[in-house]
Image (cartoon, rainbow, N blue to C red; front, side, top):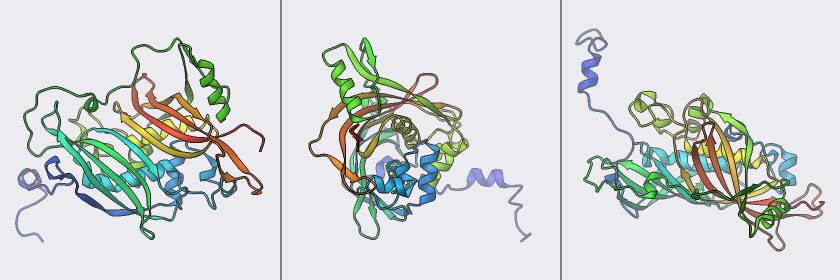
Length: 368
């Protein structure tokens, strides 16, 4: 059509006058106790799993190779737990946190099925647990949700967690100007470090247990660095979150982020987390992931930052009769012990950007 206004020439005026069809949800719209069904869901895929795990350096062969998966007790290579967590989070973002705001933390991460097939179709829902006023930022409120992914075919739960975010208000309110530790991200660092930091002698359960016993009663801790690092590139910044349906513009919309505190797009927290855990797992004989608690995101990660990892061993528990899966010929069970770690993601300029407690089953050193 040629009649009427020249919309190309008049576009600046049109943009200034047109109503914006907004995405995301303001703080005021959430109601405690309501359950939100997120649409669309997501199909887990081998390609998506391999992309996530390869790019975050999670190279455990049980999630790649059929022979290694069978040795671990799986019928086929399942999807990696980090990929499942991200795919549970991704579809929820449009309804819960696309408006922006700080990802304050997550806890009670649980896996309800030992192995999840890469062909599984997910549906995801969230329940609003709590909403409250931010004491320091009048333009935001704080909301906590419990989010769960389900197998669409069986309706069995697969992964669940509790997440807390700052969420923009449609109408700012007066605050007292204070700030709580929860809002600032907090820190679990001690005022002073132990005199000695001790590394385990190996990657097996006994190595972690023996190191803890060696520091007991001393001014010491089992804590160590991991050598690998991963520099942020376009795949980490935008491809991985978008593949999990994470629509938050913080990870791909430079225009939106120009006036934000970071001044530029930032890395999705689950990418940062998975990189740090991948570095740590490469120095462990991990058998099964069990759970995650008290995950916090302390600072921004932006383009060209390099993410390293630091680990503190919290506990090593010998579980009577513990064994998970069977070896390749199925003749005997594989003994494991339960180890709890506190992991930290750290940038090259020594900024802590993530911390979280992880519990995993780790293989024993005994001959199999």
